[in-house]
Image 1 (cartoon, helix red, strand yellow):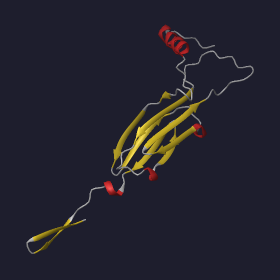
Image 2 (cartoon, rainbow, N blue to C red; image 1 turned 45 degrees about the vertical axis):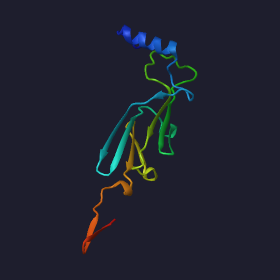
Image 3 (tube, rainbow, N blue to C red; image 1 turned 180 degrees about the vertical axis):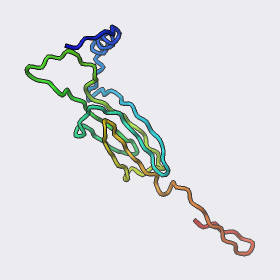
Image 4 (spheres, one colour; image 1 turned 90 degrees about the vertical axis):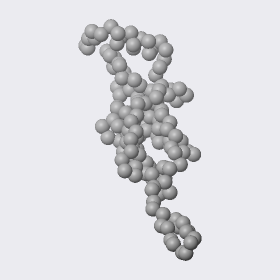
Length: 144
């Protein structure tokens, strides 16, 4: 049997149980993320430890990126007596608005060690480019 010595942890668990903060499909729990840019690519990392890759859903609609995942109990059934349960279960969801400068068609996803990593390329139209200037007499024309 596992013993707990932190009374505040037990209070947190009881509060979560009382307030029913376990995520459901109608009221999912938000998941933590990191987002950063590397060269011509944005990277978003979502923490989803213990989630089966089959239980992750990634959707893009009108520049809105939605990631949903569900963490189910691993050992539920006859003969199982839970001694301690602190890991949150249920549905997790996060939405991120993508700007028009990103290419949602080029998104790639990788799931390793409980971290879902999405890579979103910058759209060609948003990349910096040089504009050549031609000289024809007194008039200057700008070509793209």
